[in-house]
Image 1 (tube, one colour):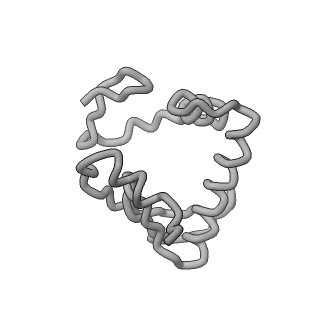
Image 2 (cartoon, one colour):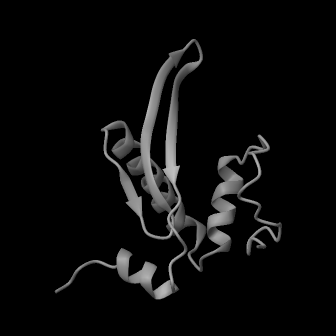
Length: 109
Protein backbone atom coordinates (compact mmCIF):
# COMPACT_ATOMS: atom_id res chain seq x y z
CA UNK A 1 0.00 0.00 0.00
CA UNK A 2 1.30 3.50 -0.84
CA UNK A 3 1.12 6.33 1.70
CA UNK A 4 -0.95 9.23 0.30
CA UNK A 5 1.24 11.92 1.84
CA UNK A 6 4.78 10.67 1.28
CA UNK A 7 4.15 8.51 -1.79
CA UNK A 8 6.23 5.74 -0.24
CA UNK A 9 5.30 2.13 0.26
CA UNK A 10 3.68 1.37 3.63
CA UNK A 11 5.37 -1.79 4.81
CA UNK A 12 3.91 -2.25 8.29
CA UNK A 13 5.56 -5.63 8.83
CA UNK A 14 9.09 -4.23 8.41
CA UNK A 15 11.05 -3.16 11.47
CA UNK A 16 11.29 0.55 12.23
CA UNK A 17 14.22 2.11 10.41
CA UNK A 18 15.09 4.57 13.14
CA UNK A 19 14.37 7.56 10.90
CA UNK A 20 13.25 10.60 12.90
CA UNK A 21 10.45 13.01 12.12
CA UNK A 22 10.92 16.41 13.73
CA UNK A 23 8.13 18.74 14.82
CA UNK A 24 8.21 20.83 11.64
CA UNK A 25 7.99 17.76 9.38
CA UNK A 26 5.23 16.22 11.50
CA UNK A 27 3.15 19.42 11.39
CA UNK A 28 3.73 19.71 7.62
CA UNK A 29 2.48 16.15 7.12
CA UNK A 30 -0.64 16.83 9.18
CA UNK A 31 -1.34 20.06 7.29
CA UNK A 32 -0.93 18.23 3.97
CA UNK A 33 -3.91 16.06 4.96
CA UNK A 34 -6.18 18.99 5.84
CA UNK A 35 -7.31 22.34 4.51
CA UNK A 36 -6.60 24.01 7.85
CA UNK A 37 -4.29 27.01 7.91
CA UNK A 38 -1.02 26.48 9.83
CA UNK A 39 -1.89 29.07 12.47
CA UNK A 40 -5.20 27.40 13.30
CA UNK A 41 -3.94 23.83 13.12
CA UNK A 42 -0.75 24.13 15.16
CA UNK A 43 -2.44 24.70 18.57
CA UNK A 44 -4.83 21.81 17.88
CA UNK A 45 -1.99 19.45 16.95
CA UNK A 46 0.01 20.43 20.04
CA UNK A 47 -3.02 20.11 22.35
CA UNK A 48 -3.91 16.71 20.87
CA UNK A 49 -0.41 15.33 21.43
CA UNK A 50 -0.25 16.82 24.93
CA UNK A 51 -3.60 15.33 25.92
CA UNK A 52 -2.63 11.96 24.41
CA UNK A 53 0.51 11.86 26.54
CA UNK A 54 -1.29 13.12 29.66
CA UNK A 55 -3.93 10.40 29.36
CA UNK A 56 -1.28 7.70 28.97
CA UNK A 57 0.72 9.01 31.93
CA UNK A 58 -2.49 8.95 34.02
CA UNK A 59 -2.80 5.23 33.27
CA UNK A 60 -5.65 5.60 30.82
CA UNK A 61 -5.97 3.62 27.60
CA UNK A 62 -6.52 5.89 24.61
CA UNK A 63 -8.74 4.45 21.91
CA UNK A 64 -9.08 6.40 18.66
CA UNK A 65 -11.05 4.98 15.71
CA UNK A 66 -8.87 4.80 12.62
CA UNK A 67 -5.73 4.80 14.78
CA UNK A 68 -5.93 2.13 17.44
CA UNK A 69 -5.63 1.64 21.18
CA UNK A 70 -2.63 2.97 23.04
CA UNK A 71 -1.46 2.36 26.57
CA UNK A 72 1.67 3.08 28.54
CA UNK A 73 3.62 -0.18 28.75
CA UNK A 74 6.65 0.95 30.76
CA UNK A 75 8.31 4.04 32.21
CA UNK A 76 11.93 4.21 33.26
CA UNK A 77 14.30 6.93 34.30
CA UNK A 78 17.62 7.42 32.56
CA UNK A 79 20.32 10.04 32.93
CA UNK A 80 18.85 11.74 29.85
CA UNK A 81 15.27 11.78 31.17
CA UNK A 82 12.19 9.62 31.28
CA UNK A 83 11.71 6.88 28.69
CA UNK A 84 8.09 5.97 27.98
CA UNK A 85 7.28 2.75 26.16
CA UNK A 86 3.90 3.06 24.50
CA UNK A 87 2.06 0.01 23.24
CA UNK A 88 -0.24 0.65 20.29
CA UNK A 89 -2.63 -1.97 19.00
CA UNK A 90 -3.64 -0.97 15.50
CA UNK A 91 -7.33 -1.48 14.87
CA UNK A 92 -8.59 -3.05 11.67
CA UNK A 93 -9.27 -0.63 8.84
CA UNK A 94 -12.67 1.04 9.11
CA UNK A 95 -15.12 -0.13 6.51
CA UNK A 96 -15.60 3.46 5.43
CA UNK A 97 -14.38 6.94 6.26
CA UNK A 98 -17.92 7.65 7.49
CA UNK A 99 -17.45 5.14 10.35
CA UNK A 100 -14.40 7.03 11.62
CA UNK A 101 -16.12 10.39 11.19
CA UNK A 102 -19.22 9.14 13.03
CA UNK A 103 -17.09 7.75 15.86
CA UNK A 104 -15.25 11.05 16.30
CA UNK A 105 -18.31 13.32 15.93
CA UNK A 106 -19.78 14.73 19.14
CA UNK A 107 -22.96 13.07 20.39
CA UNK A 108 -25.63 15.73 19.94
CA UNK A 109 -28.70 13.62 20.62
